[in-house]
Length: 471
Image 1 (cartoon, rainbow, N blue to C red):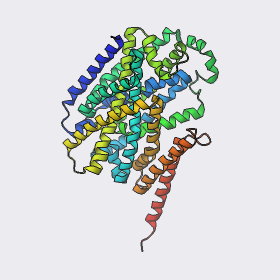
Image 2: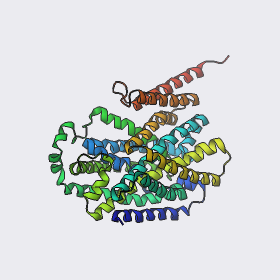
Image 3: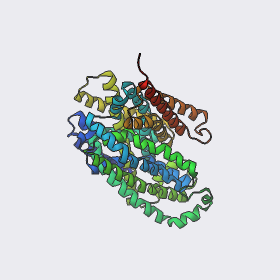
């Protein structure tokens, strides 16, 4: 049997075992949804970084670097910038509210601030978008298994989904946090060793520059090679979604205090900014050794299996595998909590008790995992899958959530109008211009501007009405 496959199978068994052991500590809904609000800065750092270094940050970013070179840094770097803003502004503020009002989900906050209708609409929109990001992680797992053992994409997606669902559905956030600690140790050590060894194997940066000299004119070795518009496109796509991502916000609800939020997420942001250089190096190594790949997202698995020695390749593959699984469990966390709290309890069973929510949360994780597998089989690539999610989060949630945190206006009607109008406008521009935008302005930017304009007009109208005397 393939040695790489044996190693990944044994590693999967270890992760599932850790998840099942920790799940024995889960007795009530708060354990499953917010880990008893007991997480210190170290565990917040671990679970955030484990979630954020996923398919897009590894397989996807390396595939980008294979094509565009150093500019691929902005894919992970932009996410790190968003996390830094989260750590210093939104994070501590929303944690305080979550502690005071016993929030489990972002939907809890939205309902308290804007009402039940806004909560329901956002939950439905994000459910569809979040399934896309789950699919992205499972696609990455399938590429790994395909590279090491020729496993087909559907089977690879099914295996990845099964492993993640088993350990997460057993214990929710409490299980995921401790599994994430194991995954983080493997993934960070694996990438930090693999990148310099792979670079040395091809003769260093000088050899890469000589081999890819024809690409230099296109800015391949320039971190701004994609131009200002390209850099801003990544920043606007990624940074806002990492500030208001429901999965990340719900993880920080598990922190024991504001200091844990600031230090844990802040250190995660610094680690992401540093990590962003590693897939760039690996993508350039792949471009040097494997020119003309039809599927650039196979670049990273091929470097691990065909450039590195077996022992290090195995370690590095486990690191990639960890990255995709940890990001997938973060998505399952978002989906299961949203379905249980934002949809089931809010609209179907308002009187649902703690144990009932726990059962529904576990069922939701299984259902979401199954749907994610089916979607992964149909979507063509990781980046296409992740872009669906990041764009939807930024357009639908960023402006209403930030406004709701820092202002008492506008109210429910305006927020609902801003969400629906901006999402529809973004989809229209995306389809009408085939993603090119209008006059160089990306669809996501147009959507966010429209959302902000609707919110501002609504707030102004409400302020005027409040000053008009009643007769």
